[in-house]
Length: 114
Image (cartoon, rainbow, N blue to C red):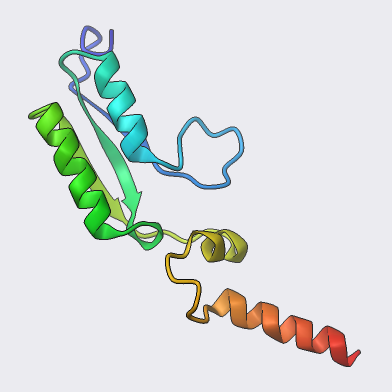
């Protein structure tokens, strides 16, 4: 249907904690689903947020998708911020202090002093 309407490519955006937004937190899964449901149109991620994923894992996943659907897969990469709590939850290495974690610790210390 999209191809018949003149579209050559379809991109999916990555969103986290976005409520009813018609997108997903896993663009590689959505890319595979949409590509399976179409026969000719190119499909890909508008942006995979590398600050929330392992770049190596994303490269391997999209390489696999490219092998399955040769010539039809696109990969867009980017970096984006969300709320401090979402950024902390999606952070790969939670052992390193982040600005959000430092702010949370400072706020807790202030509450204990009051």
